[in-house]
Amino acid sequence: MRGIGLLFFASGVVYVTLGMLWGIQMGISQDFTMVPAHAHLNLVGFVTMALAGIFYHVTPRAAASPLARVHFVLATLGVWMLVPGIVLAVTGQGEGLAIAGALATLAGMLVFLTNVVLNALMAREGGVPKVA
Image (cartoon, rainbow, N blue to C red; front, side):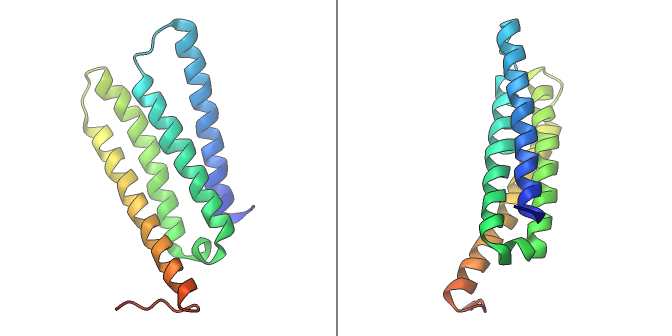
């Protein structure tokens, strides 16, 4: 694995490692206030990023698309804003960052969806997407 696929996958591994450490810290302290942020770090940070990395690894045409890089930037910004934003929201310090992170995450997923659909159409039609 290399390129954008590796970048997505390696980022996911970093996020799940941080999520595990955070989960252990919550368990030791018996303070589970931040479970919503912890869960989003693991789900959006690890699962989503790792699955995208695998997709890009097995779909080189999609990985070569500029959409893959846009997806990575938006997905990364989403994690970096969403998780701290949830911490701020849970502690009563405002929801703005969580909302911005959720929107960045959604935008990244819409770019990913576009890349997946375009590549599915290209594979089905022999390399050139047909948009009717």
